[in-house]
Length: 415
Image (cartoon, rainbow, N blue to C red):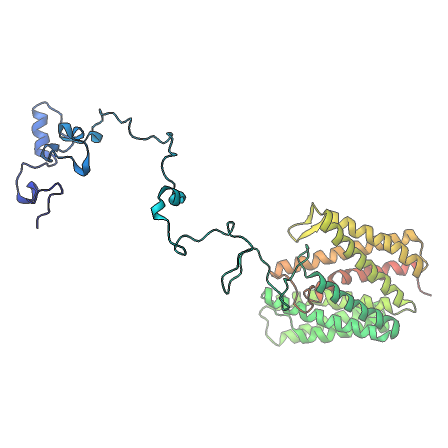
């Protein structure tokens, strides 16, 4: 098969018809003869075989000497544009409409505009949401989250409802508060067991922890600190016996998780039952919960408006030292006023009480945050709108009630 000459000749090339007159690369024999003759070997092809007609409409002078001018090093290359020359005359890719007015794409066939160039007032495509707009709630209005990342109206509503249940049970029928504590401990145990099973390989048994936790709360109410410790030991023993039924594999791991849950939820919660047992127990619980609420509120306000320096970024990135200062200040002032008016305690001791409760509440919050980070979860559950799980509200209280029980036993001892 022969190929047509691109310069107009219909005859095949010399190398196609076996004619040695066409251009070829030098072989070893040619180089050997050149060395014996004292000449340098030829290192490039001979252009004499190419037709003299310039290809692609080039000027005839470019082919003087048998090769194009741009292939000879001695030719002037000043006409070749350098990288640092002015290239403003070269049309850019994105200036196609200005450089080539006859090539403007038809409407709907050009490239899609970027998100930055799209106006927020434009109507979005059907079934899609433009960037930057909030998703609408069930009523069609956008759902707005607080600067702390929560649904603030839902969080306030749920908090007020929980507070109302606690206050009514305290002042209307005291044994009902024991029921509230027992139910809260049961829900907290369920959330902890569920979270541990989800985020780790541990499998703490739920049934003995539930039964033992409620028993621990009841013993603390009726018999005090010694019975509280006895309830914890009974819970751990019952959990170990229950767990042995599944075999020895992973026993130490499951018992460690079970011990953590038993101490964290029902044992610490038992101090709330003991705090409410005296004649003025309703006031003791009230001032303790009020100090925790003041600590959370002061820390939230100071952290949102003044927070600049993270307190524990690897555990809780949103907590700041400014927020901690707000927590301590609000709780100290509130404790001084509340203990002086309700329990006849000197204001400075009330300030010490509020400061201690605030520190305990912050430590409890950080402790639960550390557990959740280790388990790889954000909330213990989605039981409470705007809060997450019940344990996400009990974390501060569970650390605060033992401190309140001990301090009030010293500042306001019962007869």
